[in-house]
Structure formats: C-alpha cells, structure tokens
Length: 312
Image 1: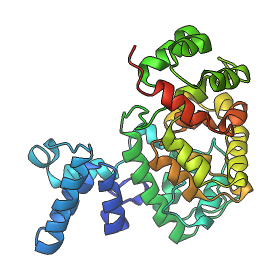
Image 2: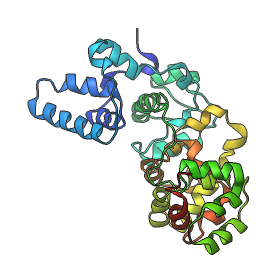
Image 3: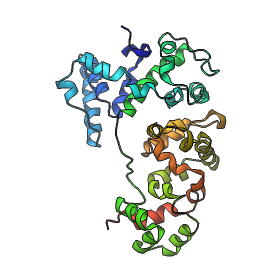
Image 4: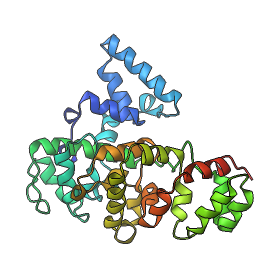
C-alpha cells in the first residue's frame, strides 16, 4: 500500500535529511547512518555532526536504534500524524521552498486542510486548490514540507530564549504585581523604565514583556529594515490569528506569518526561528499593540539589565 500523500524516502534528498537531523529528528539520524554505513568518510562526518548537535543540547531517542526496525523508523518519519493532516495547506510554507511556491501556499485559504488533498498530492494533480495550481516540482517540495512539519509539531518544546529580557522570576513578578512590581525590583535606569511603563498597558502589552529578548532585538534592530518591521506586524494583524484560528494553531511554525501580499522575505522569518521564535505563540510579540515598544530605543537593553538575572 502506498504511503499517504505518496511520500517515500526517494522524495527526500540527503540535504533535507541532514536539515531534519540538525533539528533533532531521530529518524533522520538512523536513516542517514544506514545510508552512510558503507562510506567511511561520510559516516565519520555524520558521527561528528551528531556529537556536535548533542553538545549544544539536542537529544536523540536512543530507542530508535535499539528497539525499532529500520521500517518502523522510516514510518515514523514519513507517516504524518492525524493532527498534522488536519492542518492548513498554507502551514507548509518553509524557507527551503522557492519564493514562487511559498507565494502559492500563502494564497490558499487557511480552512483548506491537508487531509482533503491527500489524493491530489499522492497523484500529483494539485490543480485549482482554492484557485491555485501546483506543479509536480511543487508537490515534491510539499511532500518534504509534510515530513518537516510532522517532525516539528511532534516536539513539545516550550518557548525558551537564551537572552530573555525578563527571567522566569521577573515574569512572575510582572504577572502578580504588574509594572509597579517590576519597578520595585529594578536596580537601575528607573527613569527610563518609568517612561517605558507610562506608555504601556499591562494587559495589552503583556506579550511584549513576556517574549522580549536580546535575541529578538538582534534580529529586529540589525537585520530587519523599517519596511520589514511594518510588513511582519501587518502580516500578524491581517492573519487574525488570535480570533479565527484554533488554539492548536499557536504551535504552527512562525513561517505561517509569510504573506505574499507584502512581498515578504521568508528568510527574515528564519532569522527569528533561529533566535528561538519558532512557533506562532512566540509571534505574539509582533502584535500591532506592541509596535511602539518594539521600536522604543534602548528598551530591550534596559529590561535585560534589570530583570534578566532576577531570582526573587
């Protein structure tokens, strides 16, 4: 019996398997080891890469190699879970796709689900999908997109930033006592903090203070142009994400923000992804209501200096 969506290992290139490996996919690790077993040079390079990934905190499931057959490992990689099949086709947008394909995917209405197009993808006949036609080359990339998002959505990782502006303890202070609580525990820059707090609302701007980090600042201030910033805020606003989408959509990759209407560059979203803003729930910092704070000079540094190491 053919795999759902017609996906097979033949659809995945070595570079795609390596990209899955680099994000901690254990199936990709086992399949690549099997693939390189008779090539000592590639096998050594692969083992070195795996050690490097593990040294930075990526964990692979050892049971895949000791308890599962190669067939089972491959099935885990290629067979999308039920919750994946219920996702929108547009959730497959990804930096590895070309701009034309991402533009096509972004034009498909969010209610067009993958499960409704399983046969079309399997038999490479994706014409008139909400008015959009996909080529055979597009469909090959779409199949990788399904494998990738199946892997991505299987992880239960929490939002975690290396250089968060507020420590977890400081966030608790903010949740319990608001700006007055933060002001009390601040050690310096109180005049600046008072200024930032005076133009903020504890409820409306809650997402900014919970999600701000120096990692975000580095992308926002040094890699995004003023035009990029306006486009991505507008995209979040137009998506109406907080109003029409199921709660589960908050776990979609941040690439879901891509919008062809604004001629966006998906590699700018990749920068946020690499900075730890991987899922749509972390994209809430981009709410229109946060725009003034996002563009306030020095706010990230002042918050980080006062609250990043606070332990209560």
